[in-house]
Image (cartoon, rainbow, N blue to C red; front, side, top):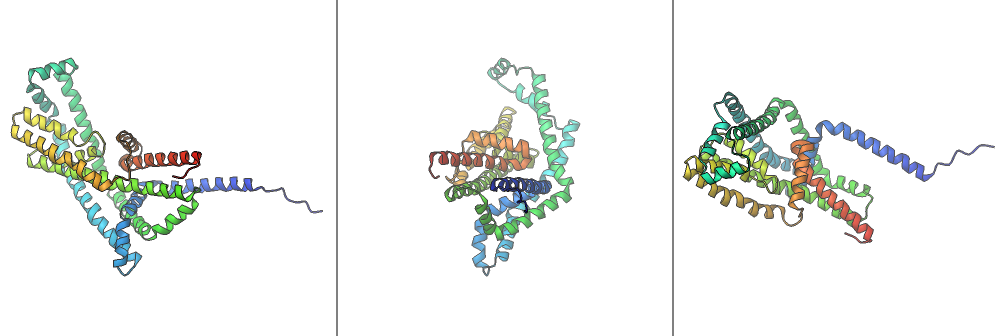
Length: 358
């Protein structure tokens, strides 16, 4: 008699297939790892500009290809060209400022000495009470911090300038991927929809949360930060403060962090101007920073973000800082997205335990 083969249970088949699926997924992620930043921003741009693409297609002979190309042209004009101009100006400014700091022509310690010397008696006593009255030690700490921060920013900016080939390749990979995601995004999202083993309502909420966080982070945080940085840099340029572009970039960067903001830059500068005798400049910077820069966040962010996402500020701050520590500059988007997905996943789990739908 012919011996029957050992039974191959469905559970064994499922286990083997899951192992295979995880293996090939990890391998695919490994392949994409060198260009993860370009891939990530391609996805982000496709999500953010998808409404524009859907508006373009009916007006361009209902051609998905023409719609995607027109949307890419808008992306280049609105995103990449301004970013390129800012980066060129920043690299040029940094290459001029860093040697002056290293040679001592620009002395942070000197500015600190002027600032402390001009303080009133009560302020000096307050510094002594907090252990900051040692002028030499204070100068050294502030100078070291400022020098290290400037060198860090200089290193990042110069890396982009020196690795031009990598930047160009990543730029074209981003645009290439964004084109196909815009054109074929509906079909791809449909396949992902089918593959996720959740009920339809949970998947709908999960997809909505993901797209909402991406759009809110890019439209709200990045655009508000860019506007605040530009307004701050404009004020510094008008007042004749050296390194206006560098300060503008720093203010834009700090504006991404809740509860910190651009005031961490312009307030000390305004105080220095007041104490050093340039009263009208200091008052003008205070008024500009409070009325214009400070109000931008309260006016623009609700309009751009809306009420779709309401993560606590402390969670946004921690996830942004943690994301940047792990993923670099891309982390200011990746961090909040992971935090939002964490909240959404636990909400789905909790609803499932209750037997409810989201």
